Image (cartoon, rainbow, N blue to C red; front, side):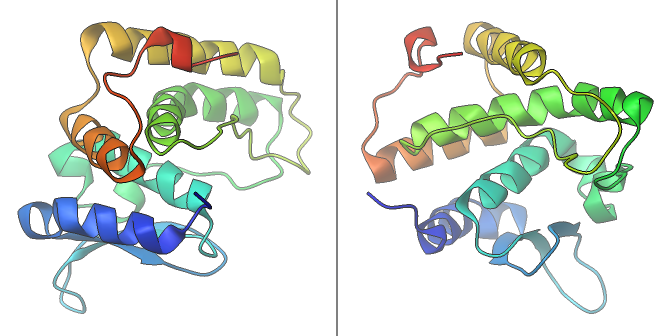
Length: 176
């Protein structure tokens, strides 16, 4: 089944719009999480360009954020854009391990391939993609053993039902 971001929007909004007052929305150049405010009565997960992987990535951050962070734009996280130096890149990778592990599980549940994103094409910070992917893989293994965050688990199930992929997720479905 080809990747259709419209399917993700329908699945996410059906799963979370009433219970969490949150909608998944196709955006433009940059992703953004925008909490409800006087201009908009619902929280918005805005993903870039209609890219399927961008939607899964932004949903992963939302699943991890928790109640208090969901009240802040972009969950209150810092973000240094493409062009990070080595220290900034190391810090970026550390905070990206958990969301990318969730994204990997969502991708598998949707029957889609996954690769880590180091998101620093023009930076001076060196990234060892293999080391980073191993760290993300270890986090996936931890989640498989101890459980995913509740909203991630709920969305994993919703994706697996829609895409007719087997559950539970198993170690064998995650290949380095």
